Image 1: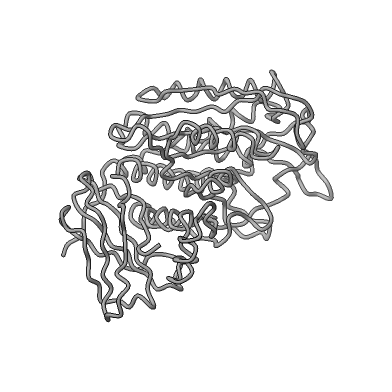
Image 2: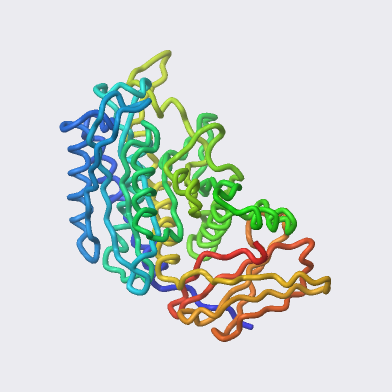
Length: 417
């Protein structure tokens, strides 16, 4: 059986990314002496206004919002402070209460996390992630996705993921559903601390736990051997698959951790709420250009400056970002009722409920020891909601995703989970 075609909207989005646009965003943000969360009117607040204007300049179907709230005094907030996230949203044409979220954080810092006055360009951490988010918004501004998109420039990441927590809590309080969330944080430097340049891949971090799962679902997960198939990890595999289908010469590396060792990012509050959420980060960070006071010491130039951003590499990262956001948002909702028949037959039978928005489905197969999907089996009729596969359920893991008439693919759903 022949497979489904690719999605024209995804191809167009990935090919429309412009290096100069990424450069303009980073240079514009770095023009503020600091964007520390507590820097006030001349710093972070002015940067928020600049971001809102830049989002608005893209036009199209984007609806720009500046979301301001009073953050109470806390561990890294020395007094109650008004802080702001900036969003550009496109409401879904078929699913207005479902969202794909892509984010970067626009606050910056130096060595002392409470220093709100020293110069802190924050070019790579994380003007790079904000630039990716804005560029995805620009190339998709005129699109009409089936699932809504939130392009989010978040604040307060360095002070404790404040902006991400605020957004995640607000969406949950409104009863909105987040289908997929990814944050881009430290994605613009291809030269690692070890002096090696890596330009052909990016890491995706995804948590293996499933917060909020019931006792019944936890028991089923253990007995079916699906410990490596949390919603966030399944999302990571789906995004890796987008890179294979649409981005030539650039791939992903899935890391079986929620974040870098002992650290966290803006996807964490979403993951903790049970949302499929991941983090993109460059292959090998250079700490001389992160969280540093600007200085030269023993011949080493410390500081997170624009000259240490590899814009060609960042363009590849942004192309993948635009591709996966377009793919997921233009696709039908993921399949429901995906089950695996628990018999002892030498074949594996999968069943799921019909999706009226799909023209067909794809069954994904991989050995339980593999990080990414190895086989894709098209199910070419919308009315067909069962597949018999010549693979042992002892050795393989299976997923099902819906395919829309435009060729866009949904996030996969794991069978038997």
